[in-house]
Image 1 (cartoon, one colour):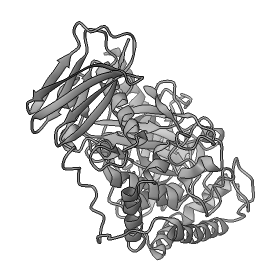
Image 2 (cartoon, rainbow, N blue to C red):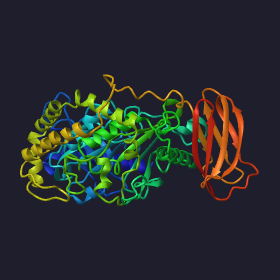
Image 3 (cartoon, one colour):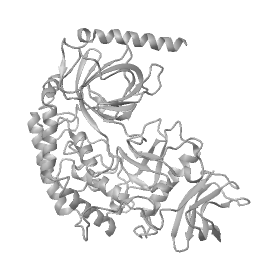
Length: 559
């Protein structure tokens, strides 16, 4: 009760603060043609984490009329706020994660600036991106592929008594029917088909609070003359403090099986190969978006993936796309400013380092079917929604939208003509020069892609490769528990249609531990429980060959 009264008192103080906002924080009659977000930290200091309690007021007129601090807010209330990003936190204008809250700290979902209802948002700092538009443009182009990508809105931000300039309000990547639309995975769903999804994971810089694991394969697997290192994966959904041990084991084992399939000799087999584990067309679109802007962080940082439940095409899908502030020639290392070369071949020009590009991408591009998907998709997008004239019109529209606010923003941050972090030469001395540099890069880069991407053969008018593999899509192998103990290992097989199966368990060196044949019925089957088997601590593989259907392989650990 005391805490509730304390929150209510704080909210009253906030209302008093709002009534005097113009006098103490911003100039009298301050207005903008962009939405305005004013954050009051209540004496707290915003830090990297955790989120601190604060309050905000959002001013926005849906009819497009000017937004003024004297009007009634579009939204006001409590928020949790923290800084986000790693390298970008060196800048005086920092990106923030915002969680809209009720007075008692619980999530408060709302439709914000015309975007679907949610409680988690990102205020992306445009400090390093002098164009202000690199992320906005890329997410827009990603949505043109008819996949979900974050919606955005330019805003102007005040924090306490200080004007901070133009931010981009962005939808945070999150499991939600209006965002990443995969099945909700609850804490009591630890076996059967429910265990198979949904999940979101990413390849990114390590955060100490993330649930994470490391790939079994080095990035130079097929290029031994290059330096190589192993990719680190981080779990995003379920969150680290919610995911169960069984769920951790499932998603790590599934991704390991996917990598095993990509690395195998018959990786491109249409039945037994990588298509059992990943949905190719999503990887094609992910590749093309990263290549059109030659994203130097592409594939190796801020790369998200998601997996739905196995009865809902439970393969790994690439995306959503995220973080393109170094794209479109906005960096001076690893040939980032060059219009030539593929971004997925970064390690041909740069050492692998701490954040390598997974070996998958180069491997997939040796598969003639995948290459043809890339060629056909490029031809379709290039001739329609990614037409250069349409792209330049988008850029012009963004520039018009921020024209008034840019004067205030660059007065606050007079950075043109200055070298900032890894900004490339030539250093733009004006906003128009920055936009011209982007346009020139797009023209030359896309011409290079026209000449160097695969040429699609027998393409249909629109790519239809999102259909699941008819043979293997309805089959799911689940190992539980994983890690397990000797005498306590179970294997589950989910089939829509039963059939004869050959089952083999082998150690990591390929030596067979046991094998046998049996007939499995449809739906969820407990194939075998490893009672009375002496398994030393280590890594093992189970292989199940289904007559006229294909082969499933998974890894499990005994501790």
